[in-house]
Image (cartoon, helix red, strand yellow):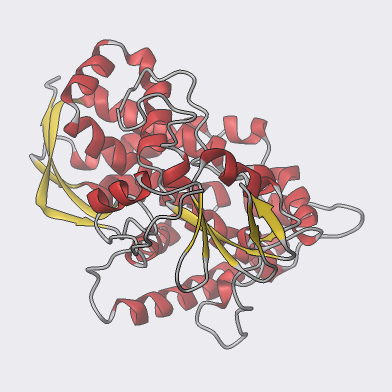
Length: 392
């Protein structure tokens, strides 16, 4: 392999895209960390969970304001516990269960659409994309209406963690709201243990494998995981507006041929992978693309680069809503493939379809838009969108 001069990843989206394009499939930076950019190499790392551990985060202390994310978090967990916990969740979070959520998702999207319909300019993330996802998750869990506002604020907090322009006091605000959410969830779980209902929380309480059931901390942690990973759907709804506004010919084609919606969504996720990268740590010496990575090394796995690998995707820099095949890995690969991918796709499809049916056109105002740090996530914590609405 020809070794290129290492430059740190730029913090702006256009610069990062160019930087990723120039990477070799596997590289080591001057600080000693490894980076995997190629599609096949990324899949190899994600598949080899024995050599590449997900347990890359130090244990969250009991006195930490973020302890809610320390237990039940499948994304930071290796087998055998990952397999056991995912098995319990899979008992409840089935394809049939997710399909049954469709009427609720439609009603949620329609209600939030009614709240912005007719207004010329909308704070799109704050008033539509984020609350659609947060409200669906809350209602799926059985959270009462008075708790929906907490979930919607919590969703905004999670996006601010990736917002480089967030106010200095944002972190403390996020800590405080996380502690409020943790206390709320534990009270709610206690009530559901006493009085089960037809919701995901009650299903998680009742789930059992080989005589084992989930504890309250694990259930609360899984709820937090649903909220954090649910931001992928929020960002795809946001990226859809950005990309379709930037490519009016694609928007016109999609309006003329609405059957292309599913294909368009997959291309949006490939072109602007909502999660830019994830980290792993080697448990033993391992060879990837001819490079020997020693045990104990941090490895950054770049989805955003893999999904534009020209060895797999023809004309990868072209946004093509008819791209086929489109084997992107925006939802991951292997045992950590996103558990909520079917739910996320349904949320995105329903909300985006109704938005397209309700509008004639839309544009994004850069002055009212706050982009996230693309080295962590593609998207925005806020987007000012001007809509031209259809008349009845």
